[in-house]
Image (cartoon, rainbow, N blue to C red; front, top):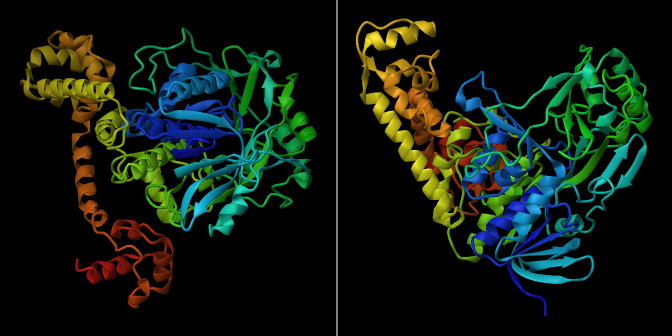
Length: 620
């Protein structure tokens, strides 16, 4: 007799790994089914985690007790903090990773997670009873029963790969697709579509002429992704390199346009606008004679390099000839050409805020199945789906993050309220409250919340409390203690800042844009007592003082809008009653069934006037 489970997670990618770990760590008896147990958390495209807004998401996952941050630190070969020249709301950590170590670290974490079973097979259909999921059926013929199911199938649903006019099925290069599940879901009433993504060629680093490239080192001062990481797992970082295309490269690429599956409409799926193929760049930016490329190492012990910025589905001969006209790559050997992949996704407006589907109870979707792109977006959805699948089994209240609480909240709210017409990628510009959602304060925002629902561990909470108290103590000292002019002025003069004529609080000095707290601690003997203070504490105190006005304003704005989020709309409300709102609004509201006035206001096609009608109707 097969064991029965609380939660079954289908797919061992970034979403599936986080979903399974979360549900199991919260106490649910969990089964993770994947097609290949050697590729947990496989980095199908570039071997990196983080970046603009994505780094903030990984910090949030870690603050809540997820594993992506820890796995990243264990496998990182280079760290960089992006946007350091801008304000702290824009700082975004990024790490180049060892592709193989990343998957090995994930497997180690999963195999040592209590309550979690692993199984290698292909799920071909759901088991349902009435409008509820009760398990899954695999290709071999196993029928596993469960109370909830989380689907995280990535690019594997009817995956079809393209290299020029050559097509072959698969979810990744040399890996079989998942067939049957889409058809099963469509029969259950789900709306599906096709999307496309791509990846560049991989090349042999031993045959790259790095002298013709510019070098890009990692940061000496490394910013880790996990709050639990105290020092690097590895004793050195590996640099990346930068080169560029040129007109000769572009001329070679254009020779293949006639056979391009993108341009001859062989590919019907919509590709990511923010990460286009090289051939799409030549068309979209036809005035550009050159495009920047990053040569990224795949690991500590391999010579394989990834050409970031050169995704392509052109014929392999065209790719081959074009690559050999790139400076530094004239004599390079190619391990594998680039390709495009089409796959099925499901419109995320069919989901609740918990990522449970509206059609089948107990069924959750997470990751690229929802029309997103990126490891980080997938992992965040997996974490939230795993949490809510467990909470449903436990009969507990759902866990939903708001837009002012996390980038994860922005991500899910955008998906369920607006849907997608292209692969969704997170950017800082999508968040209204960027100053509140910084990469340094994810633990402040989320660790206690996660602990209260049963995921974050006690040691995480205590670590956060210790950091919080240290920041508050430092802020209090700087805000209440004076520095005399004769001590402050030599320091101010050295930093090109105007002198003071009388004693002022340290916080007033720190509020100047050209002054940092670290500079003050190093230069002013009165603050030397903080010379060994943790960097996170120093930066946290500085941000709280320097940007207190902005932070307070965003908190006030969020509080005002929270009133709309608290106004519930009855489930299944009949919008045909409201003839005073536009036809488009009635149609969209009926289709998406928002649960709050705030959600309704974010649906495309619903105007402020329509919202006013809803407010009046519901007595507000």
